[in-house]
Image 1 (cartoon, helix red, strand yellow):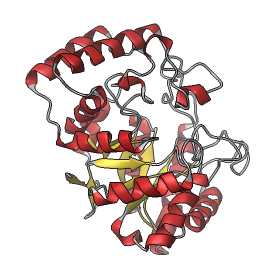
Image 2 (cartoon, rainbow, N blue to C red):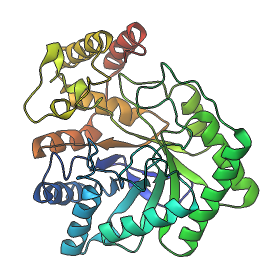
Image 3 (tube, rainbow, N blue to C red):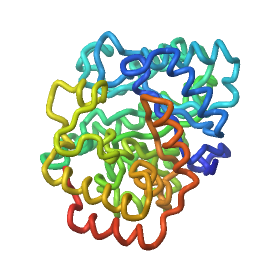
Image 4 (cartoon, rainbow, N blue to C red):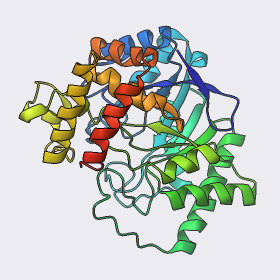
Length: 346
């Protein structure tokens, strides 16, 4: 396994981060425990979860993933071997403290306590803000995103959030903080306000990034490198699309797209054409398409960790093994040719 520093901390995290969001919906508790056992034995010490998981989110599955991690900690006693990341949900889900509940002092304190209880631990290593109160262009909303907010009110909230997170750090309940699904402006303001007011610095940024979603480049990439606020790349396989399993409308039984009530945002004509091309590149060079897609993300200099998710042990083993794959110049050139043809396919 390869490791990188988490932001400006002294923590070394594995380049492969174990995503957990299927546990409690697509995966049972026993299957989640098996994945944790295997991942840790392979050197994957960085695990990511969230209070809203399992996914797709429902009132019945809220908090289930954290509970599964908690029972594993209680069973194994290996909490100290894991760098654990979790997240507080932003507004919009009525079963999580009400649909109008925003990320503020009251909700942070309640969310942290609830996550600690479910996780059966005294502390969370990296506590992240799942998405901004004001909304963002993530979750495929970049086509219509039209920011409209009170700058002074948002910055006042940023300071309140940082002060509250600082309370949690001083109390030993969290160690470090990070962002998720933030914008360039939001990220820089958090960093600037933290420095100005001597408050906790955001150490990472968890946004979508894959062969089919590269809007992180070039602006965010520069920020991540210059500010030591590296990317924790979520959905590096485009929700499984880059495996090729959904090509030409295929829907394997039990796959995530069969659980979605709405048409998958990634299921566009352009995205399907791009995926076919990427799978052809993998075939041409004798590569597994999932490993090729993950190896590409792993290789980016602005990436701290690539968050993988798997519903089977076979998928998990393949995904973790991507850390040992180095893509040749020929493969990278072929990838860039497809990227130029389909820069924003969904």
